[in-house]
Amino acid sequence: MYSKITNLLSITFLLLIGFLSLIGCGGESHEKVEGIRIHGHQSSFMVDDEGNLDQVLTGLFKEKLLEVVVQNDLRECIIIDRNILEFYSIEKKSSEIALNNSLDKPSLANITDIYVSSGRKDFGVYHLDHTDQKRFFSKYELLKRHISFPNHREEKAAFLRPDVKLTIKNINSNKVTLIFDSGEIASEKVSSSGTLTIPERLLFPKFADNDTHAVKAVWENPPERTAFEVHSLITESAKQAPTLAVFLDGLGYKLWSHAKSKGYTNSFPNIDPEPMMVAYPPKTIYNYYLFGTGNLLNEQEPQDKLFSSLSFLQDDGLIIEGSMQIHESSFKQILHAPDQWGDKVDDQIFNTLINEMDRKDFVFAHFHDIDNTAHRHGPYSSEVMNVIKQTGEYLSIINQRWEGNLFVFSDHGLHEYYDPDIESFSGIHYTAKPEDIIGIFIVFTN
Ligand SMILES: [Zn+2]
Ligand SMILES: [Zn+2]
Image 1 (spheres, rainbow, N blue to C red):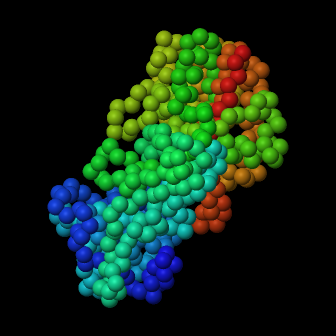
Image 2: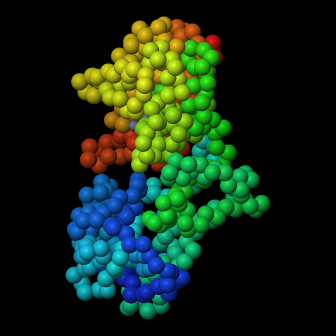
Image 3: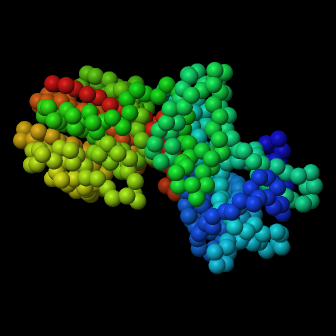
């Protein structure tokens, strides 16, 4: 069925709908949406300008888009082959958005969502088992499977069947952890036959439902250690003993394991890190905020200061940062300008840490070189392996010198991706792939 549809698309200009809500949405009042939500591999974009759809999508997505599903609030939809996009333009008339084309086809009014499919196919739901990926369910394909084509092909019509859902089978656990795009996590029971069904509202949440979030991953046997507990571990420790927190940006568990298999971790103190589930999205500002406050970052709300529960330490607390302050804190933050290539700053952070550690009761030191180098050269590059080796040497010295508890952890890892602009591999992180969403955690209690 799937390949048939693909073939049909390649020989047909376009498939359009003329149908109104045959399918269970009629009669409901729909919230007017001031724009179109465009769902790509990485995140959603709001577009409310007039413009040519082709240009809009090309501006938003760097990689080649293969196909596009356009949907309105009445569940009408069309699938557009990438090659014919230039026939369409987005027009915004007062609060109504219509998709028109020069071929005098029916227009699709009140577009709410556009789903794009790229060669990378990483917009969807990951099924993870402990530190590995079992399967990936592309949301685009999920949606496409639920599009019905009436018998009369000449009508070129399609509509979305109700109740788009994802059924995952062969789960070897009686419960799973669901990862949501909001960063929240939830435990969910699995049926005795090992099947879990995710309903449409958790796959394709509507705009109007601010409380509903999309599931990004279904995780069997997730790592016991999570980024959600780091804040209380380090602050409780700091209330009792001198505490040093070393934050190694970008050192994912998969990256660590790779470096270990190649012999680049021999310089680390002799202890293996635990895999740690980090918060979604696996990006620095979100997990840094979680480490510093114990809460998920909500950019709409006023933000807490880092380590405010330790403010009684006053000048005995310190944050050592790279080139800029990322979140506010009542502790002093010492910043460091990177080298002329903008890559390396950890040697300075290490020196500051060595100079300051004897005078402080609590230090939070944010090392940057692994992440920066992995973005530029790709996570599995020799450049990154050498930075990991260097980081291990720093850690060994820090561990010998620090008299107190030492925590070492990371905010995410990176996966490799081919950047067509520079024609080489680089590193990136934002998905629920194991490479991105599993960090490391080590504790040394002295
Ligand atoms: Zn980071
Ligand atoms: Zn990064």
